[in-house]
Figure (tube, rainbow, N blue to C red):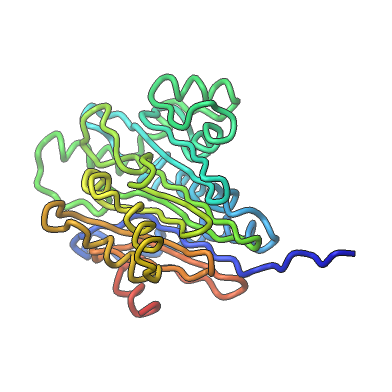
Length: 317
């Protein structure tokens, strides 16, 4: 019998948003709930990788878990736009095929990341938006929700403060969730999802559904998911910068992410966070913020979960 393929290490890294905020906006009880949500999402994906499953399945499962958790700004926890509506977006990319799917302007789809995957696998297009995307979700049998499902009390309070022009610093602004994975067969994948910035204009599109901005995956180079200020992440092409620095300058994944966090910072100032993994299983978590909600698991090692960037730096640097 021929030898079976050699199984390699697996890696899953997830994020729940990077932001600069006053520490008082995340008291200990909220920090603990955030960590519980991150760990649950991490387990949803890492269990798939541990049994030899695909990176694509793992990133979708992890992001779906975060989309279902109202503490994170994606899916159910999506921020209100200026009209008091929740509009979500997502993208997913398979590093082995370089195929991807993206969706935006969703108001009824429970799990945008799953619709993005269906677009990738079954649609002749790579990107669907608004009513057309929701019609496609319905045609594929994806769960839809009444708009009230997405409108939590916490979101409503923040929206009211924006409408009233209250100068309050929010701990949840411009969050995004995302995941990158390397499976035991050496395949990479990424997924990113968000509800966008609070108080955004109706129809605003962020970076989470933009390939090369909010995420990118290529088996030969890396998988990347970003978070932060969507406008500057799109314009700086942050996810693709990590890819390009790795591919063309042969930088380590750590150095590539560090440089991408600061890329064009003089012209495009704002919050940026990056998670990335390379084909050898090296991974990084970078941001220019004091909050970087994140978690990771490699093989059978103990999972790591953090909310504050300081915790991440102590663990990884």
